[in-house]
Image (tube, rainbow, N blue to C red; front, side):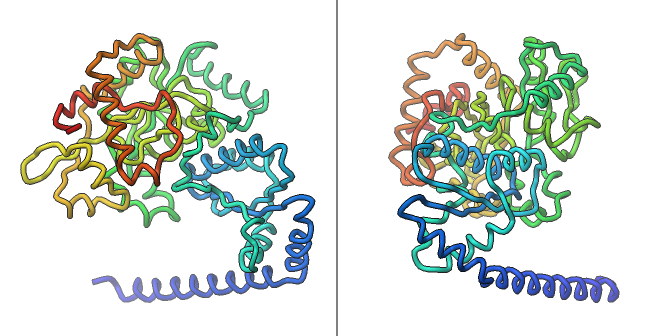
Length: 417
């Protein structure tokens, strides 16, 4: 039983939180109903025949959405450059990366008062034409291929490029040498970030162990590739002493700026599918997704190779078929898999190494694709495109979006039946 003092403290804190929430609600309502807000929205409506003014949010709380949404908005600026449109934005707080916020603010008009205009505009009939949502797609997915067909990467300043390169040089890197970013999800970031903590338990099944990636990282390093283990807050260091492997996540000079620049400029991003890899997607860097789950949500709009976690039926230990993956592509929590009688198994270090080798060979046009590999790839996409989930989560497919051939071989012939 909890001490009585602790119990009363929780009631007191909870009560104060409720009071602050009500005060904030009243404050927002006052802003929305303020005369200047009403007349501004009215003026915007009247100006529509000559040009459309729109208001919308950018979600700064989650790095994946923050980056992908801003990338889509930046690409659409290029796409809609000949249209008479003027967009204003407000930022959903708290912001997870201060440098990306800086990038956004120097490329978009972002002001706190826009939120009041956006709220009132949506409250009044006929406001749809003047509202620009952060993302028009499910989970900020680029189903229209904006990243590939339009400029989606906001430019860095020359001084920023030089600052990042100077940092790399200080680690031993020399200009022109390739480097890869390795991002392996664990529970440390969510557990140590207060406003995200309640979400953590639902996504534990996406976590993997950094030590399983060491053989692959060291193989890349032996090929002359610098490997930077990424992450803002991670559970444990990467257990490797290789001179070309930098545990950037634990580096004393880790910063929001380098978090963005390194993902934007790397030669390869290796990720388990967690937020920050969106930077590499927006800046059109090659991506390799390992232990990706659910595979229904694979990143189909960019140059990306995928290998998922293995799903087995608990009752007999048999791999799920691809059609069964699609029927059980849960994204809400581990309990859904448990209730369905499914066991989730991580890729082994040896399997990860083999898939990384495949990606590196593909990048250098040295991968030997067999006729059987091509057949498996076609079957995989054919089954996916016939499933209803495809219409909801996918659209334009990048010609280099693939599932790793080594992973398909691992799953066996039965997988694509």
